[in-house]
Image 1: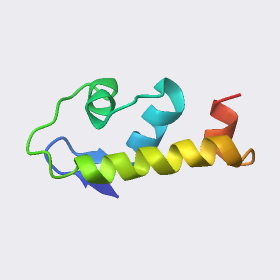
Image 2 (image 1 turned 180 degrees about the vertical axis):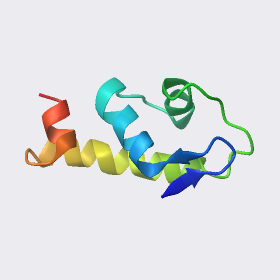
Image 3 (image 1 turned 90 degrees about the vertical axis):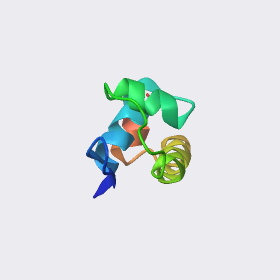
Image 4 (image 1 turned 45 degrees about the vertical axis):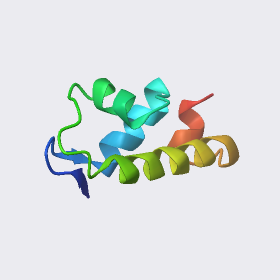
Length: 70
């Protein structure tokens, strides 16, 4: 699913960036993916994906995000 129309970023790309580089802000996610925020409408969705990925990585050893943090 595309979460950022301006930069054509998918939810999977955001999750992968969170799993490999552990950004702390949506702005850092953009940087990890080689782009910058444009209109900002997706920032809230990116933050939600980041929060879910963080929760998953700490409590779910069977998923790819849990394995990435080991």
